Length: 385
Length: 138
Figure 1: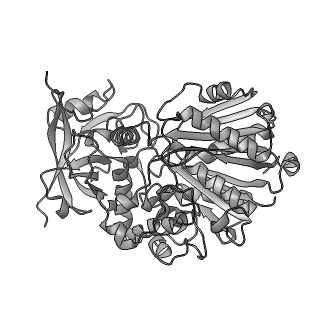
Figure 2: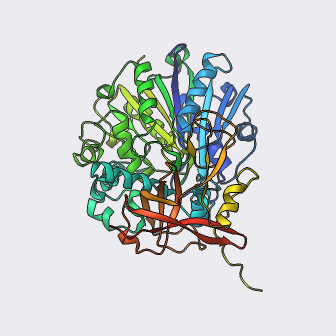
Figure 3: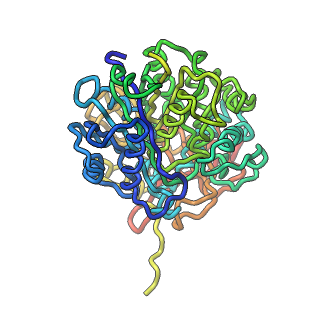
């Protein structure tokens, strides 16, 4: 990247079920934790990028966060949409640094889907991703939207429900090693297949969890980063792909714009799938994970099921995926979910991931998507420039 | 006082989409056709999403098509919806795709590729919505 940028700090709040702390307070807690990690003070922050809360939206969310925490940023940006926005926000923060809008930017995201909404409210809020005239009236839930994609993949490539189930098996194999993960009990394929049907072919254990929590990172120029911390995490490549918004408008149900976002990120970072030591993917539902493995080039189109079955993504596998446990098991408060993929990547690159630590972590690919496999962003980070 | 009955989500309507929703109330499934490039599109828009033409015509579709993909919803969206129900993406013979429900069917017998035909179900007091039933499978 021109004017290279690095991540120098990270922080998280309590995760999982965190009643009694508002989404805004979680946002502030995560920001302070990230500053403490890098040893900076509140007055050092001159840029703030935050993601709005679905539970308690605030019109000027970044400004409200700054006001509450006593920050005085000269650049503020609130991002407000779904999961794919996470890495787009990181990219905007990098652009702000490169353009001189700010020198030290906090990117922070937190929400309280678990404790501040009933299950029913959370379902209805999330299902509003559907078209208000031509989809929502028919009563699709978010799992149902992804089930349409899962069925199409089964029809096209003979993918099986047992293969989708491997997503949760892999997730729990990692989360069992992570004391901060919300769900840590290991499961088998049979456990997933026997779990409660939600929207055929998806069962409860094909679906991500609902959580409270937040995360934040601190970004600055690569030049300053080396003075601030021992192991900066450098931004090496970024790409986006946007194919549609509503699933009924998808030209191709089984191949997503992750292809375009991945290719752009690989090109900018000058690496390919074989160079990636760790992939932190967007596992909101098992078919989303499976299709990303294909579209990002880790296996051929149609072979995502076999790839998951091979154990490649699990501890000891050739492509560790979501070593924190992902949104299937670790923490998924709604829009902030993908930022935990990045805080985990930072720990892996620093060598502080404890039981989950991988032997070699020089290049990490992170992917997030929003809508129903609609909007995609891929970020590649590394231990060196 | 009685508890208010839960109601299904009502479609947001605009003057532009009125021909579509009026059509639903008289048993016609209307789609937009571009006189310039002959592209049919769903949902209704201000312009042809393919060629950009802004003079779109309405055509009554055959109402026949096939299931592109589907799901059986086992955990309903809200109390207004009774699980299980089948949601499908339907490819109309006119070449457009729409989301709908497949009704009057044992959900376990639905499969992608099956032929379906539109019918109209009263969704609220003053609005019917297009849903589909399975054709006799040959």
